[in-house]
Image (cartoon, rainbow, N blue to C red; front, side):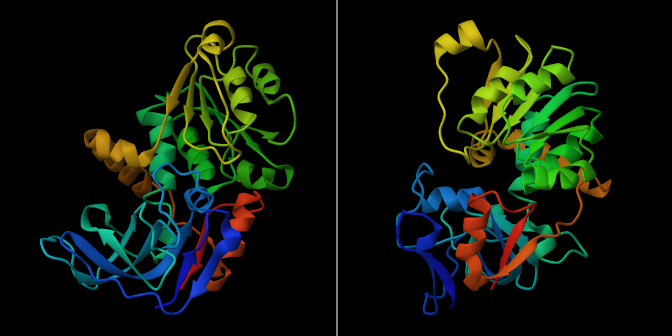
Length: 326
């Protein structure tokens, strides 16, 4: 089958289309999916650069998120059958291909009436946004939320969810993406590339700071996030490091940033706190039913253009969800 193979840990430039990848066969507890659309995520870039903890070693078939039709099921699988359309994510990769394997437990039915590509985000971006805002961030009506990378797939979902729950949203994005973010309902949009984001947030909040900050940018932006949070009760949920690693010390927490810093990895949350994830899934179903979360409208690239899609995402030159179509 055709697939994209990562051949080094030097980045997406070493992601290559091959035509002779072996066809996978489902083992116990697995399903085989004919991929209709694969989601492109920052995780794919982290894996390609070797910065994702426990990531695959090259050469490997790339891509963690895929949606499509089940063509075969392994032993012990119940509730799923050939012909059903599902979406799922697996850190072992393989979604950037014509067929992929998914653990049956990680395969979620594509909502009725949705195309495969429209379900992208359902198991990665949307749960991350909801967990950061509600499960861990505890946002309530009347609070102020600062959302970085608000033009991305997770950021756009976070803006819509935060507004739904009555929060005031301050978002950051590059200037060319501001209208996209405003269209999601953000109350204020700041230039993510400008200095003084923390000071701007404090001005907008009368000096108090944001009750909750959703931090995925990494690098120097982490310090701005810490500085923008309300003292003592402010929370910063860190769920990404697209701009690189950043450090915070115990001295910082005692003398500079007296706030709550919370780490989020949606895969770990699923494994370590399945009861919380179950509650999150139920809440997400309600948000879909009420129209807060709507079918995705990704920018679609042919499979062969996967390296270009990842490079553009890494350069922050994209808006919203990106997809590859085998």
